Amino acid sequence: RNLSFTDKKATFESAFRSMGLSVRCVQDLKYKDVKYHRAPMEVSGIKYKTIKIGAQIWTAENMRHGTNNYRHGVYSYNNQASNDILYGKYYSQSA
Image (cartoon, rainbow, N blue to C red; front, side):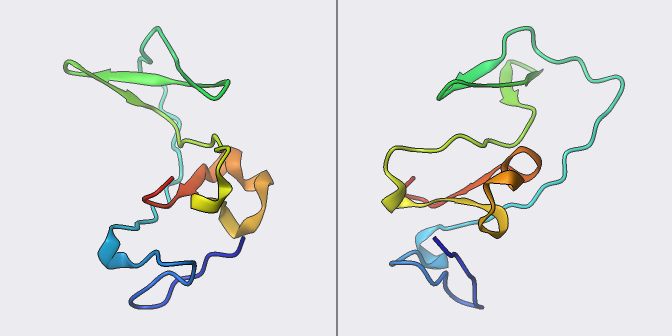
């Protein structure tokens, strides 16, 4: 599905900025001195590297798993699944 943004709304179903829809574009940087947490987090068969900061464990890479309910908004950058590894997926609030 196509997802495009204007100043005030996303043009897909009823996903408006005021409803909390957000898009984050991040380029992963590789640092030599990063110590990854020993246990990866697995979601839908994809293992994500994790990093421990204080007492919390965070993902160290962009999420890229899908959902069985595509009606509720999981998108690939530029609508190309081949971009998922680099950019991760974009999720609507309802996803």
